[in-house]
Image (cartoon, rainbow, N blue to C red):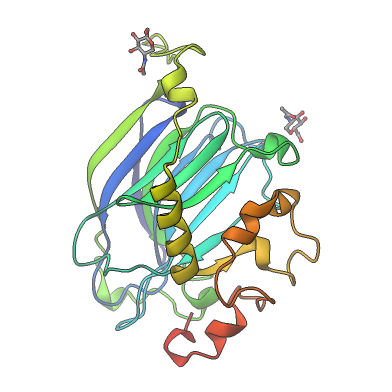
Length: 268
Ligand SMILES: *[C@@H]1O[C@H](CO)[C@@H](O)[C@H](O)[C@H]1NC(C)=O
Ligand SMILES: *[C@@H]1O[C@H](CO)[C@@H](O)[C@H](O)[C@H]1NC(C)=O
């Protein structure tokens, strides 16, 4: 299988903070091409790594890109906490800002000004909530085997090169000491460690986004998780964000029944 990739990483590792990039995705046919903007400490903690992901899962010409977010903590790779969404714009046409806000007790993913996912640190989630310093990465690679429609559409190198553009990188966090530098902040830097407060307006925007654009959520995947991971039942919040049509069940590819019936979405 042909495969290739490229990427860059931050010099420092950070404990909590605000991390964002403006990203423009490859246009035209980019099936199988994965563009990722994520935080990880997999290089340091092989078996107990933490990770926070934005992943763009390729597109088929004329169809929209899908975006996925995911969370791993302390090597919890056996529990996928994926969510997937459509977008309200064409991400190949312009730069849009993708943000990971990570604090001690919650994580918020944003696209432009809109919060799209909030992960609250619950007791039951325990160490599966990322808690060790992570570096920031941006990559583009060949995800033919799984990315687009679960691998049905592969990378076609006839359309290469695939170019993802990144700009306005912002890393505002607690950089931990590297060999050459002292930590930029301590446990006392409360504004970073406890950074997230969402306004009521933002919360409504998030609910609207999730109702309209979320196509898969692990909390609602009863085939994969007959008993959902414990944080899924963490009170009314889960109910609040239930995406339309995803109430009953989703098939093994994570498509809700509602979307399977809709030909416009069936390729995903
Ligand atoms: C993380 O996982 C490892 C290996 O499973 C375990 O030994 C360790 O106690 C866990 N860390 C915490 C903070 O619980
Ligand atoms: C952490 O707090 C110290 C002392 O107030 C300050 O000088 C430093 O800039 C802060 N670090 C960050 C990353 O905000």
